Image (tube, rainbow, N blue to C red; front, side, top):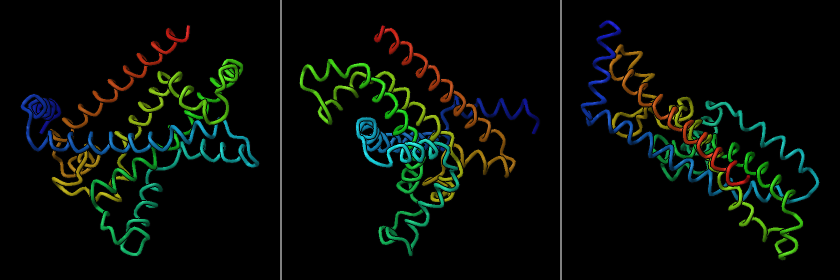
Length: 233
């Protein structure tokens, strides 16, 4: 099959709303959005607490969190695999090779990104509004909700950055998900599999959708940053 024919067939899959194609896209979005939500629930308050707290070793913690932003996906997948494997601490739950395991792996990758960016945003806001917050009695942990709300546009950028990394990830989900058709097959793992099998239309179709999502994420990120700058100004 030549390239032009493969592209034509790929667009046919997209425009024809092929059920198998849509199932892969739907699972990918479900896993990624759930992972970002889990990471946000954990990372936003922890990042704000790290911004306001002062304790011995804080600088080392910040360095470690920043370093984990570049955590290799295969290492994250291996860590989740060891935890969920039959001999691991959560092995009895039987979550390995399931969408839940894929969510855990992606959340582990996204969490440092959200935590680190949240820490920086809240720290900057706290320095800017310290006197005002103190004048209304909002000191310490009581200031966290206010600071998170005030930095919501910048924090949206952090969440979108996490979504971007999770949606394009393949190594970790392949290790803990297993690429099972109709159950744990996502866009990235399907692209890798179908390319190796020579099924270029499906791989190209999923690649086009993935690129479209990436462009949409960047557009939304840019819009959020512009809105935030206008709101702050």
